Image 1 (tube, rainbow, N blue to C red):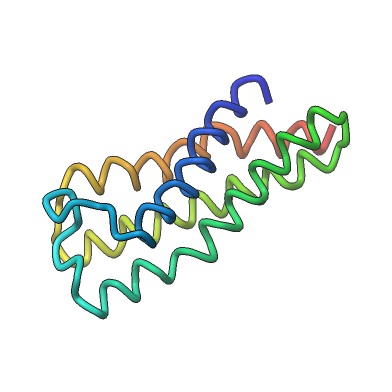
Image 2 (tube, rainbow, N blue to C red; image 1 turned 135 degrees about the horizontal axis):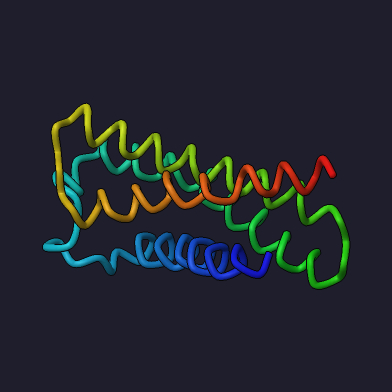
Length: 129
């Protein structure tokens, strides 16, 4: 958890802030992804909301449980990591299918796709021991 905690905090608080900013329509159009106001893409983007909130809830809960020395933190952290990977994969796949390569959106989603891979094996190994 020593190395995982900063990733959870950045990711989970980042998701909460992103959705707050999105709900309040505070993203400048110049920063938005292509076709940001297209109703279909608005719906696609909002389809990630439940997943991202589950990621934040499990990640932040795992930090809390770790501080309480409750071993359930490992299960929740694994769930959070796998869901984060899935969120990143789904977004990257979408942008790739559209042939839309905007580095600002790709970098965030590649982060979501890649960082969990460094921790999933460790969490599973620790859980099995």
